Image (spheres, rainbow, N blue to C red):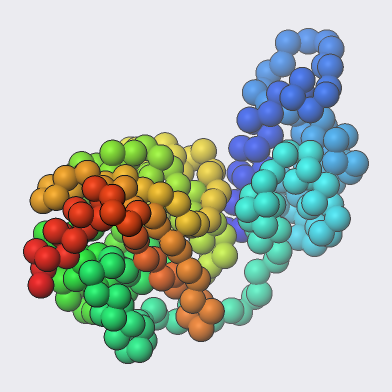
Amino acid sequence: MQRTSELGAFLRSRRGRLQPRDVGLNPVGARRQVPGLRREELAQLAGVSVAYYVRLEQGQSHHASDGVLDALARALRLDDVETAHLHTLARPAPAHRPGPRPERLRPRLRAMLDSFGTVPAYVVGRRTDVLGWNRTAHALLAAHLDHDAPYGPAGSRPNLTRMLFLDPRQRELYPDFDRRAGEAVAALRRTAGQFPDDQDLLGLIGELIVLSEEFAGLWAAHPVGECGSTAERYHHPLVGPLTLGEEVMHLAADAGQRLVVLHAEPDSASAAALRLLAASVR
């Protein structure tokens, strides 16, 4: 994934979702040939020359200032995550940058996961590989897999995004599957912009584009997002429906790794179901 081509595709996707009337323009003249804003309209809104914007979108300008990028972000009505993604894509990549180091779960983190006891907790890497989970998280998310799979070779680890799109059990597990899938693709796009030299990440994306028409369609729309705290509904084959809070914490000492902890409201039906699930794996 070349940053220059990604930058152009991202800008075109965001131009395409805005109409002139959305940004206070009143176009006149011949019938429009392209959906969304034209290049010259966006350049006008951002206060840059049309020639400069065309070079930027075509990957021929590698030193756009923060001011120009922020002006484009405002004109395109990007949110904070999309704006950060725009800045990432516009930065020239170092000519000789070493690839990302292999991801491993530190022993202390594995011990910490086990200390959560009946509370589901797991650590996920930048490629959405599960690097470690406790027994309750394993029983909730993927009881059909070997519990020790995250601790084997990198290629054998469970991958949350791959499972989501290629394992039919995941569609049954998540009642709000479409939302979950959209958020997963948006987060993966953001990570791909941050780690453009990660060949394993690019391989995962290519694999999913080929094997999942649904993933390919979502990816083509260039969504951008970040994993955050939320509430998720589950329909587990053993204990039935649950609604769990999902807290996501980025691990400062392990770039790209996130600790995810799930919890139920006290004295709720979900809490009772979660206790039942935890008891099944003791």
